[in-house]
Image (cartoon, rainbow, N blue to C red; front, side, top):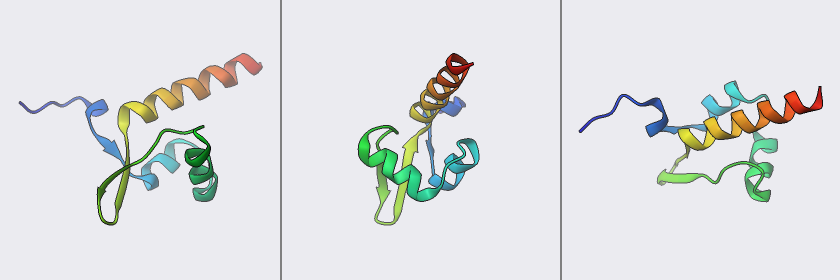
Length: 69
């Protein structure tokens, strides 16, 4: 069964960086420290993140930003 749920897929780093304003090196540092979700190897030269994990991260970052105001 095929789903049209956008949360069911994976996002590549280029797309993530359009959603979250951070540098590539800053992103990878956050992944290494556990601040950002872990990556998944989809192939020898393909790394991606679960869409659901990125959506949750954006929600958390939005809540943190709202809490600062």
